[in-house]
Length: 493
Image 1 (cartoon, rainbow, N blue to C red):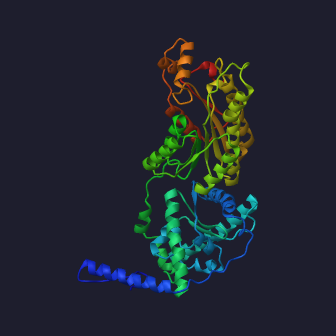
Image 2: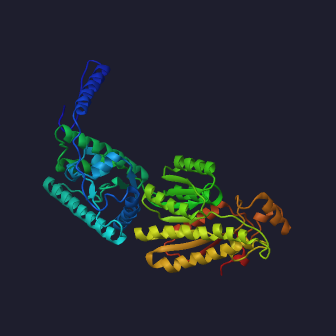
Image 3: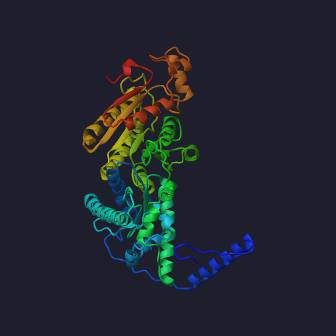
């Protein structure tokens, strides 16, 4: 047994040495199991009885925002659901035990030397909570800088200080949180620290826990071969960002989901079609290796929509883009349409977008790193077709909604834009509707889709590209982008 390194076993054959290794490890496991785990002493604090969901919803967006402001990059937060981790984080023993060091030296590159401990006092007020967390982070930064400076000077080495941001949080009443630039990073750190909690508790239950000292950990953390494990490839444009997309299982929504994932964004996909939604999610995960969460959601169900944003926070810590895309083309002469039908159209094609946008803006304001609202409007908002009023009217209202959000929230760095697309081959227009509308213009179905100034068909991927362009246009808000091949009658100006 090499202290601070590990167990070596030998034999005349590989099998013999392996069997001896298993035997030694089994004896150690049996010895540990024979000892009663040391009881943890619960801490006291206002957040202990707040509930995991409430604490997570309060804390995670603030963490994302503070990290974004500090680093200029986007981050995602992961909550590891574990009663053991929660009990450890909520104990008096955690205060000292967790600060001793890592269980394995090379863990330091993924978890830093120590986790940041939080026992929140004013978790219900976002501004007070932000100040409390910011203060704790500042102390962590200062301690890390001192650790770096002390070891650099003592060793006489020329090193550049790595970022001082903690990757692991132990939060009383909540448990284990990790943060990283990708979902994969956060899960690796959570896996590591979940094991570390078990190791620490068992070590102190049978004796002591003595990992490498600070100076040795410094050597590991700043060893180029260790850092190489993290990779140095250029990050995709939207790495760490989170996009919430409705109507995501097909058509424009699916094309947009694929394009944002290709750029590195993590996705929250909502749609009514469970089979198509799950198929889309599985395909995107395999192809782009980003975080994808799928939820069957009726966007006119206000309560369900609000719950979905809590789920976004639970999976990623917050959101950066809302692509409010779901809708349906309702037809009928405006003087003859049933009021119930018109109201249903407004519920889906206007009010649902308002609920989604209001929830997104609420999170944007907690994060304080801006945010982007993107609405799928329609050329019908400016150039309604005959018997298309029940669809055109709420879409016109959506254009006004887009501009209102731009006016009311631009001061917070929140941008609001819309796309007016026309004649896209999606499930919005059934074959019957296309045939009917083409015939009314004396056109075939194919010619109907090319009936524009450029005489080119516009595809769902073109609209997706428009959404991405608007997402990246940092100085554009209140804009209505037309993607229709050219239709002067539908031009915003």
